Image (cartoon, rainbow, N blue to C red; front, side, top):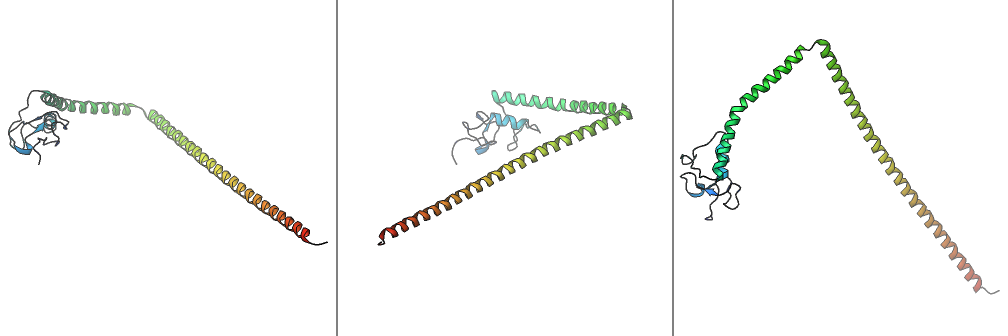
Length: 190
């Protein structure tokens, strides 16, 4: 193993780790002695808040610096979250109660109109989806027809080429027979 110190949380070195400089915040020795300030600050804050080392059971000594500021800020933020969270839940529950109460206060005619409006909205959305599907199908059909037409044109061109080749072969044969006949007439005595 190399003699370079590594962080026991992220295993990064002093130059490669994301958490800043390496410190020894407790009495641990060996490969678990060092930790980045930022890594320790994040690890200490997460629930449950950790103030003591799990290995040597000593209280963490945080040196003054950016890591200490990060740890203090993170702890303060966690405290705010713990205090604000219940109030936010109560406010959300109260708002839900207000909404349900407002729905209960609406008369049956209003609820019927709301249902009809929702039905009409769903029907409109269904019609739009069907229209889009129909347009896609028509586009695919036009594409298929275009490809079929291109195939037919290609086949017609090939057939025309074959016909022209056959006509050329017949003309060549006719010319050859004419040459042979002419040569035969020229060689016969009169």
